Image (cartoon, rainbow, N blue to C red):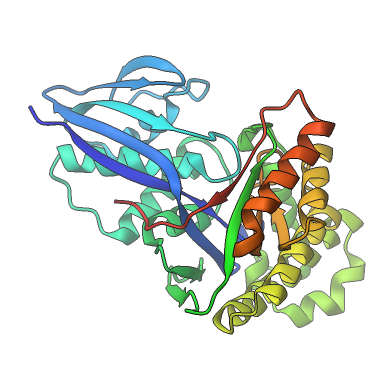
Length: 356
């Protein structure tokens, strides 16, 4: 029996932090790192997974153990509910680093299970099944940024995504672009469901309900209503809303800057996004803030911000292409001198296409 292989990339989100779950527009793109899954069908309801990082496990479709590393495969099987199981081997690097390895592996399991069961899934169905996998099955109060980026990713474009309508607008990389993406992994991984992620999402919902009767998410509230009522909110709730509305504006400005090949302006917006994440959204560990400050003060870097939830993991940066490798070396040396105990990595991340 032949073995099939698929690749589900990781994603970076240069601007659009913590707003997809509130109905905000976001920017994202995929890179050449990700999850590789080799798989073949089984004539039973059993799924057997081996992993270089975690070992091996097997389960019957329908079961779920939220504490086990196999939970993403279990959740994928529960939302798809296929008749046939599979045998698979999964590999991936930088797990839990803020590059959306969870959505990457979840989508890989969904696509493979659909394939061995002859189930045709549209891109839209894949996005919403992965959302259901993480939100309904595993309890993460996430939005659509991660699966939309991974499913629709394009090597030569930044994606502008409307998380309410599901619309995706590729902003093609300008031919004259001389920029490169840098990823700096702190060496600290995190688990979103165990961080402050869900607490912040709940605070955003509270802000929306306080600002406008019947509103569930901040995207339902007009900006002018927030401006008129913001000082009536408790400080922590006001700050979460402040981040949302200012970040949505930065996304639109970033889309324009990218289309105009204004890398310096785009980098400034990344820095402003990260500052708001720290000040208003209050995410980011001391180590990650330190890494961001090192990166954004390095020659050749236009700007940087936390990748993903911002409670550990990576910082993503935009740099001058000719200076990117030198900047990576300088960042790595500076950070390692301060934190020699952490297995940090700094590298130029090449862009790639979406789920294949």
